[in-house]
Image (cartoon, rainbow, N blue to C red; front, top):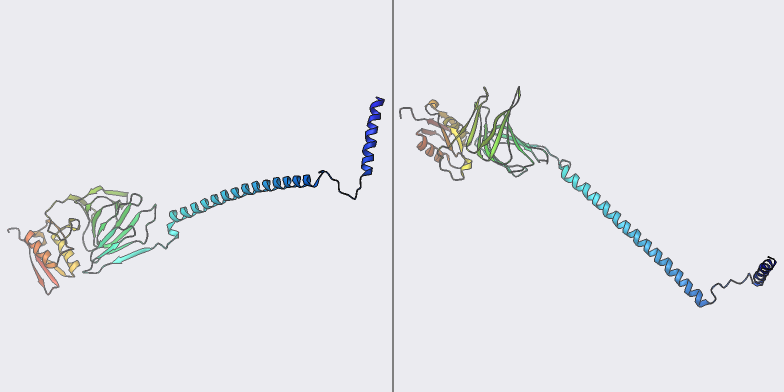
Length: 316
C-alpha cells in the first residue's frame, strides 16, 4: 500500500510542477499547430451552418404548409358565403309589371323563364330567385302564358286568386280576370299541380294535370272541372303552344282586351261550344274570318271600336 501512495504523490507533484511552469499570460495551445487549429475551426463552422440550414428549411416548410391551410380555409369560407347567401350580395325586391287594354308584354324572369302578360293584367315576381327557395310569381290580375325553365332544386309556383299552380318545367296559361266568373288553367306541355287553401286547409284540385287538359273553377261557388280538349285548331302562324281553348264569350273578351274594342255578344246561349284558337299572332280581320268560318257566327265592326258578334242560331 505504501508504494501505491508514494506513486500517487509523485504524479501530483509532477502535475503541479508543470502547471507552475506555465505562463498565465500566454494562451494555452490545445491544438498543437496553427494548421490543426484552422482545420478544427472549419469543421466546427461547417457543422454549425449545416445545422442552421436544416432548421431554416424545416421552418420554411412549416410556414408554407400553414400558409396553404390558411388559403384553403379562406377560400372555403368565401365560396360558402357566396353560394349559400346570395341575398347578401344583392338587394332582392318584388318587381311589378302591368299591361293596359290592347297591350301585351313578354317578361324574362331571373331564371330565364318567360311570361307573356296579356292585356289588362298585372304580375309581380322577385328580382332574384335564391337556392333553397321556390320561384314565386304572383298573377295579381288578368291572364298570362308561362313557359317555365326546368330546375329540380327550385320549384316554380304561381299564386293567383287564392290558387297555387306548382311546376318544375312546363308551359301553361292562366286566366284570372276579376270581371270574369271563372278561373282557368290550361296546360300546353309538361305537368302541373293545382292547390287551393280553404277553411279545412290545403285542398288539391289536381294532383297532376298534363298537356291539353284545362281546369275551370267558378270563383263564387268554388266548383271546378277538369277537361281534356282535343278540338280542331285554327291555323296559326306559330307553334301550337300559343293556342287557347275558349268559349265564344271568352273569345269576345280576349279580342276586346287585345284590340281595345267594346265587344257586344248577342244571344251567347246560342253557342256554348269551346274553340281552340290563337288570338296573339294574327290580325283582327284574320281571326274574325277564321272564327266565322269555323263557328258560323256573323260579325260587324263599327268605327274600328265596336265589335258585334252574332252567334249562329240553333236552327242553322
